[in-house]
Image 1: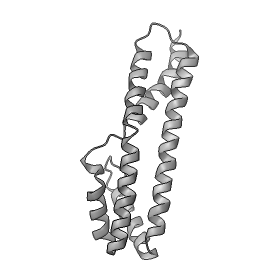
Image 2: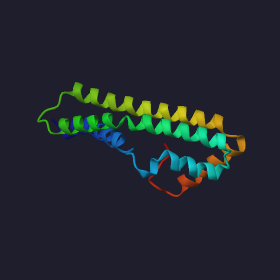
Image 3: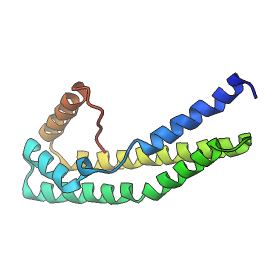
Length: 145
């Protein structure tokens, strides 16, 4: 197999492995901590605080449930890399599963955004948008989810 042919499937496969492993759960994704921070920054009332905490906890529970999928995908990718020969169909299936997983994650993030949008007043939405802009402008390798 020539180098160009290998690169046409190896690079997308490596990208899928990177993307599926890039959103590890950690202390930064604590829903109560995030809700407390946002409540203070956005001046949420108690009912909004409770609803925001519920939204973020539900998202964290659903997002955390994907950990097994991520581990399975990593095992499959490393198994493929160790083979002497690869079947293009197997590679394509692995990539497709990774793409489907990422798409589902983005759909879930959209649903969370919709819920949070409906919870906030226009002024609070503007404050949140400014917080995100400020956060993104610091060049940190972090993201909201």
